[in-house]
Amino acid sequence: MAEVLVYVDHVDGAVRKPTLELLTLARRIGEPVAVALGAGAGDTAAALGEHGAVKVLTNDAAEFADYLVVPKVEALQAAVEAVSPAAVLVPSSAEGKEIAARLALRIGSGIITDAVDLEAGADGPVATQSVFAASYTTKSTVTQGAPVITVKPNSAAVEAAPAAGTVEALAVSFSEKATGTKVTSRTPRESTGRPELTEAAIVVSGGRGVNGAENFALIEALADSLGAAVGASRAAVDAGWYPHSNQVGQTGKSVSPQLYIANGISGAIQHRAGMQTSKTIVAVNKDAEAPIFDLVDYGVVGDLFDVVPQLTDEVKTRKG
Image: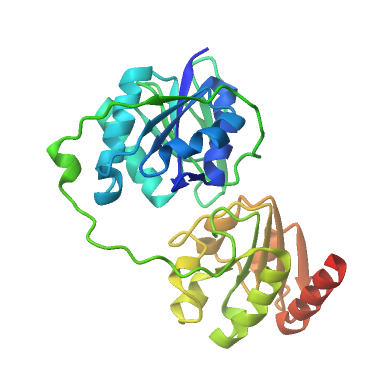
């Protein structure tokens, strides 16, 4: 069976959930071979092996932290040359898509971004995408080279499938281009204690109807009762009510959680493009004609200032 390279997204050896999802998808089309780079790369082997990686290629060179994405691109290029994979899978983050694009160009292959599913096909892996603001679903294959495919978080359930997880050193020779742009400083993001927005299983968002930054406390309270991430519409972000890093939409982040709760969000196409692939969508809006109700699985026509506190209290009651 052909091998499939999976780029590992980890923090000091702690593997992030989107990578484990990629391993599940990789097993559908071949044998997963994980590529872990940077500090703590060797510590990822246990988790990767538990979820199906037959091999883990590692390199902990300082260049991966000291410079921008090019060292990672060159490491993946070295892995492609060593393995000759059937495909290369990368998490569909901002950095992941840049790495994937640069890699595809270097190895002369086609690229598919923001896939939401993956299956084996007669002519290679078949990727499913949600396109044109999620108005259409397409199935695509790459006709030249080893496909490079980025996959959106929450596109597949994480499944344990113990494999060897044999650790092998990946030899990488860095070019002058790899060290052309140096990272001079880093500022850790302040932790809220909530899940990462693009990876969360539940997202609770607020929009124009929240009517002020101080009222986002209602949205946060509901999110915290559910163990959810907090999102915001473009209107709320543009008004300065919530940080841009939490914006869901075409010019913000795309999410695909199991449950998405939209509060005071009308459902403009810009917002729908970022959340339309959510598995279950619930909306609270006092305007019964709001476009968001054309999309939802469950809709509540009512004032969010009445509905959201009641929902929060009910969740807390049921949980304990």
